Amino acid sequence: MKQILRHLTSNFFYLLKLPQKREGVIVLTYHRVHEAMPADDLNTPPEIFRRHMRYLKDHCRVIALGELLKEEAWEPLKGTRAQPTVVITFDDGYRDNYLNAYPVLKELGLPAVLFLVTGMIGTDKKRPRYAALPDPDMMDWEEVREMAEGGITFAPHTHTHPRLAQMSYEQQKKEIQDSLETLNAQHFAGFCKSVFCYPYGDYNEDTLAIMAELGFRLAFTVKPGINDAKTPLLELRRTGINGRDTLFDLKKKLAGAFDWLHEQTQRKTLHHLVGGAGGKGKGAG
Ligand SMILES: [Zn+2]
Image 1 (cartoon, rainbow, N blue to C red):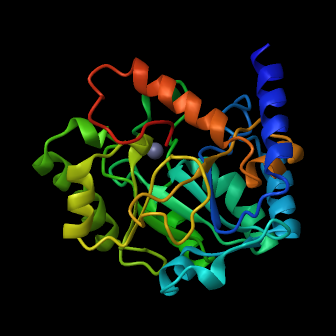
Image 2: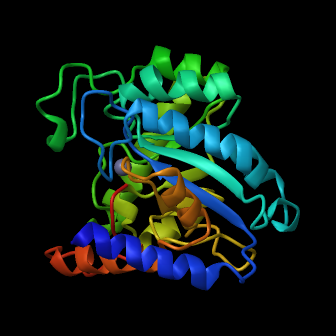
Image 3: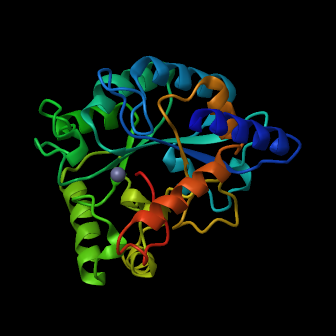
């Protein structure tokens, strides 16, 4: 029933949005590309991932993070409905990104950005929901280095993946600084020290102040929608990809047809979170 409603609603918005201009940069969020786990909102099985990437290669202008940083104005970057401008992002730093996503990206020559939970890289630590998976579940620094040499960009996603909006200013600053310094200490090309991604898309006024204080220029949330010249650079929007997304779903997501649904889901998540009322945005991430 839920699936049928999801299809009906997104088809409705797809038709509604078809005549509208849609110009800007669309940022897609992937998490895992694991072969043995079911397709869900956090896992895109390798064969589905490959189909998505092929589609993006053939129909979109996929740009590297560096291009977003280079441009003073976003005007030259903005895509059109016929050829959307897309940035591909992955959250957390799972080893399956190295094993299953990187070979496809490399083969198709697609740039991507990986946001790393730096305190977990090169360790046997696991996110609680993946406790049953074999070690190691996160990539190590050698793998990061190899991907960086192959054109993948890396940026911090905190050190331990907390909900930042539930922490004090000092605690938040330490989390963010630790992740920056850990990446810095690895000395590799492809590390973008002025870009950040909020875990769970969770941040507040303090986080934004810390971003400015530490010199970050761009930061990514999980708020759905397209980014244009009016989008605050420290609150960039992203469109979550689900491992069950067909190519038509992907096309609808690029058209913004899922934005309303994503907003509703995030509102519900926010409602169920105890003590999380201080955050400016919530969701997977
Ligand atoms: Zn995350």
